[in-house]
Length: 329
Image (cartoon, rainbow, N blue to C red; front, side, top):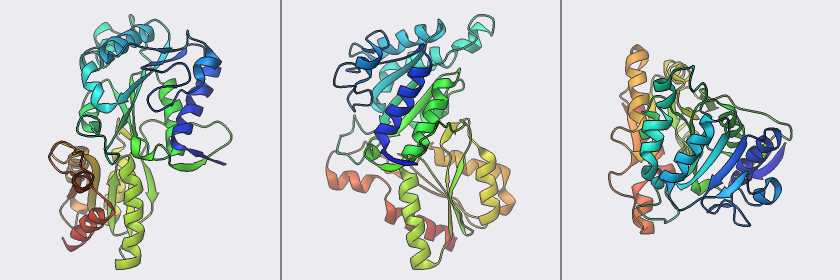
């Protein structure tokens, strides 16, 4: 094992797949040259693989996502950088009406594969303001034809990104900008993590806590403190893949604990927490001992003000309060 940062895990996965397969290409704004994109995720790769495989695009998400779709339909495996998740809305027609639907509409004899990865930075906490801090995870998880993953640490990011590049379907990789510098252990040897599998990050017996992306890290901290302060044993589940969702792992945990708390950085109404709650009520209702507790961002655009931004999103203390509420219920 070796210690690497979150952003480096992304670059290693990309570089390894580009070395193995010449059809893997990378494109995005400022992706080439010394910069390697707004977050330097492709830094130096153009010098290694050339301008035909790593190249800059115009400042037009709809244009270069459309370009990538054409490349994917003709045998390439493009990895597309949309720097902020907010900017994915500029390319919604290409993503929702084309990427997600074209294989279904064309039939297997016309477009047998559409391997495209769209990766983006989401989340608040970096004082980036209302137009650069979104977490639209539930929006894209709601669309058939798209796969959606949201890793919370370097190990998961590297393994799931490699699987996304190898997948023959469109995959959205949502990364959280707050943990770009997070360090974690990653194996020296090559590995992948399957798309569609949830993981138990911490065993527990009293409450099931399902968290998404960076909230997994906060949930783990909250769980440790709750055990020390209150003696509450919290089981933390990381779905990792939001679509297709691993319902079985979540439901099995609820059957064990009898309680469910969900936490994500998207707004609570129509967020993924509602879907996790539906799983509990539809598939394992008889095991519930308390009502569902949902945690998420307050229902407002993410503020630029540090104090207001911190107030708007879940934190360790609010997660602990949510778990305590579930225990009282």
